[in-house]
Amino acid sequence: MNVLAHTMNASVLKGFNGSERCPRDTRIAQLVFPALYTALFFTGILLNSLALWVFIHIPSNSTFIVYLKNTLLADLIMAVTLPFKILSDAHLGPWQLRAFVCRFSAIIFYATMYVGIILLGLIAFDRCLKILRPFGKFFVQQPGFAKAISVLVWGVLYSLSLPNILLTDQEATPVSVQKCAALKGPQGLRWHQLVNDISQGIFWSVLALMLIFYVVIAKKVYDSYRKSRSRDRKNKKKVEGKVFVVVAVFFVCFAPYHFARIPYTRSQTNKTTDCRLQHQLYIAKETTLFLAATNICMDPLIYIFLCKKFTERLLCWRRRRPTVSSSQTDNLTLS
Image (cartoon, rainbow, N blue to C red; front, side, top):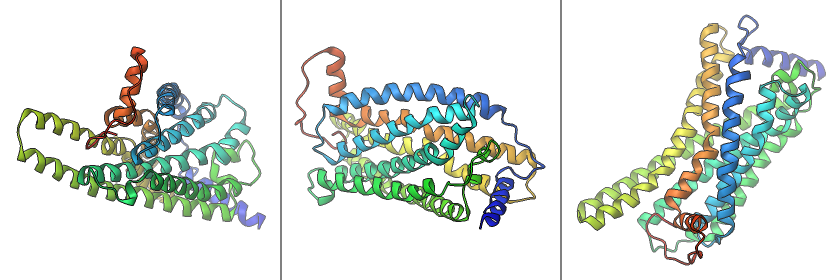
């Protein structure tokens, strides 16, 4: 079994390196991306710490608030994992730090990223129901349902990731930690591939559902706009249009990474791919992964544009005025 694991690990290393004939230029990965991630980390911590302070003072009395609070938790966890990636990629720590990234922090980052993707899908679904049935009281519009489905999402994604942590159990050396796959045995590699396939399925499923939700929302907004062209209605449509910030955040952050991931993965297993193309796809993958990480700074836009209680509490804090009652009635897109 040890011989088989060594053989598979060696094969994986060659695959991920694009073969020995294509040495990878890591200068960008060691200099540019750590600098970008450092700026992202401090910005994300600042924005999400402020959002945390605000949400602590907002009761979880609607599905929308529940989903937003879970999104905030996901962003904070992702932000906490970034320093390990920064130090590891910049080679500013011992090689054991890279082993920690492979075995724990990177796995947590990716698992939490897909929790965030599902939560964005749930937010889109919630906003769709809010516009179609603003006074509806379906069971899926109850805070209890939102809490239960959120716990289920966290539980399932982290349960899938736990074996990845446990099965990254091969001996770590300064050479093997260069590629995380080398720390996995045969079972670990198979499980990693399974989780990767499930993750891809999650993204494409949420993407398809989100497109359906926003086609319905767009049609509803357009039909409502045609019925009345008064000033008040125009202002109302402007407010309703803010709901599209969710799909904008989703596409800006996550779509490029998953689009780039497909040709990059193929290039690693295709021996005919030339070295220049492999390097370009590697840079594309790393760049789009950074865009995915910027989600921790983009999600606060959802809080500001769509959550009336959030903006009211934030303004009250800035102006040092008494807080506004949290029982204020929600409108079509603001909660």
